[in-house]
Each structure stands twice: as C-alpha cells, then as structure tokens.
Length: 377
Ligand code: 9Z3
Image 1 (cartoon, rainbow, N blue to C red):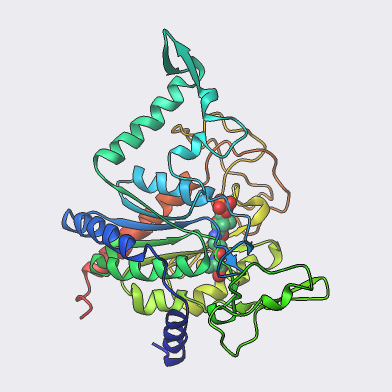
Image 2: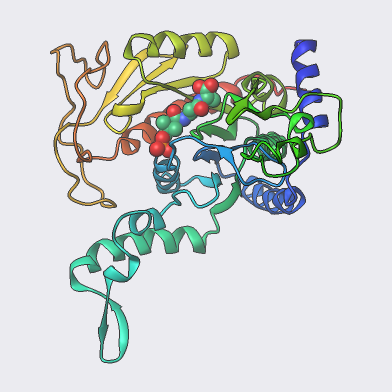
C-alpha cells in the first residue's frame, strides 16, 4: 500500500481516540463473524445513517447530515431475505431493519394497536402487513443472522469500520462491504477540539481551548459574535479498506451527489481511484427512484423503479410493475442518463429490492472467480 496512505491511517488512529464501547463491539462482532464463517454463510457489513462531526469534546454542538438510514435499513432486510448474515453498523437512533416500518413517521406505534378484552392487539388494518414483517424478523432472530452495532460521530464510525473489517478478513470473498452511511468529508481533529461548550458571549469565549492544551489553534472559535469553524478533511479510507483491511471482500460504495451532470463522472472517478467492485451513484432528490451502478465488470447501468405511484405496502413482496423509461432509451433496466424530473411521494417498489439481488449475483461471480484462483497468502 502507498506509504503516505498508511501514514495518514496511522496518524488518524493515533490521534483520534477510539469509541468507549469499541471492545464490546469487537467482542460481539468476533463471535458473530466466527459463527457464520463456521457455517459457511455469506456475510455483509451494511453501514447506514449519517456521521456527526462534534465541535466540542463535551459535545453540545455538532455538524450533521440528512441521512435517515433508509437505504441501509431497507438494504439490510433484502440481504437477510437473500440468506446473508448482516452486521448493521448504523447511526444511533436512525432507521433499523424491520422496525423501520413502524418508526420515524408521524404515526405513533400505539396507532397500530387497539384494546380488545383488556389486552393490547394489533388493529385489523395492520394485521396482515405486521404479520409478514414479524415472520421475517422472527426467522432472522431465530437464525441469529442480524447483529446491530451503532456509532454517532465520524471517528466512532471509522474505528468501528476498521475493526469489524479486520475481523471479517477470514471470510475472504464471502464478505460484502455495503457502505451506505453518509460519511462526512470534514471533521475537527481531536487536538484542535475545544473541551467545553463554545460560548456565544464574548466575555466568556476565552475559555474555549483545545482539550489537551496543545499549541494548535482551536478549530472552532468566536470572532465578535460570529462562530468560525475551520474543518479538516477526513482521510479517504476506501483505499485502506480495499487494499489493507479487507483485500478479498466485495466492496460496494455509494456516491451521493446533487448535480446530475457530475454523478457518473464522480462514481467513475471513485471506481478508478480505489479499484473496488462497485460504486452506486445516487442523487439526493431521486435516490429512492433511481441509482446508477458503475463497475469494471458491467460498466454503467441504471436501475429504476416506476415514478408517481404510492407504495401499496411497505414490506410486502410486490413484484416490479415495470421500469421507468422516460427517454425511450431503455435496455432492460439499463438507461443511459439520469432522469431529471423530480418524483413525488414514495415509489411503488423499494429500489433496494432490485439493488440487492443485482449485488448478490455479482457477489456469486466474485466468489466463483476467487475459487478458481489460488488463495492469497
Ligand atoms: C449514500 O449515497 C446513500 O444512498 C444515502 C442514503 C446516504 C443517499 P438515506 O439514509 O440516504 O436513505 O436517507 N451513501 C453514501 C454517501 C457517502 O458518504 N459516500 C462517501 C463518498 O462518496 C463515502 S463512500 O465519498
């Protein structure tokens, strides 16, 4: 591996303290991975949700992003449906597989219940749907195929990712890394972070010093009544993941953009830079309706679900009605550019129900290819 990348890694992990619960995370992950490795099962690490960037060591304020963890939680369910074991590394309190159907919306979970003969039961309207979700959930629980881990900030995320990836190495090509978390590109290094709450009142603002009294200037300070924040770039970890932490696993990264004109270019750039298996490009406003797969194996391939139809059921096995083809340039589920209109509501079909089977097919090919090669020593 490039020594400058290794240096950046070593510098980052030397300077940024590990999460308090790292040991517990490692213990849980090790037991889970070993069990499924012994059983010869395929295993996917799904990352999900946003990463915060704390401004103070005793964090009152932080920078965050929009991600609710829908992509990750939904994808995890479809991987489980395909028989995979799933480590779900998610932002605390973001959406979870299965319970996502009943949380984070304007309805309280109590609205799904009613009282009957002094007992609480699910009301008639939701019986069928909840039974289907419950059966899937029970099966996964019985087979112990879902491990839920959580992070809050960017540093916790990177520490957890590194440690879990290393534990997954013995799985070789049977492992997938599905990196759907919205990872911050910028952060406040520990040695430039102020210990205490940043003060807005000038009379008290002198108290804002970096935690360990280093000579480095604090990354956040007040000037007059304004708050000035000077963030540093988060080192790019995909290279280490691909070359060092998980050299044999299938790696799927996501590229999020808002400008359709650069999405494919950025996805290709990432694929060329990191030489991993697949980049899935998506635009903020259309991410539930279309994504673009960019891979060395299959080039550029758009996946779309029909627009302007409300989902009938959030959890059922609805079949795909048809794929959108706004420009008449369709070839199966391939089209050649982003659809620029902005869809409304929720799609009729969860796009992850198409994404995941596509990935598992690619994964099978990767495993088969690896079996014909001598093992990496
Ligand atoms: C994505 O692009 C995800 O699909 C979304 C999902 C975050 C858009 P929601 O949680 O949204 O369903 O609301 N994730 C990856 C974005 C990212 O941070 N990529 C980095 C990069 O492109 C790291 S691989 O550099």
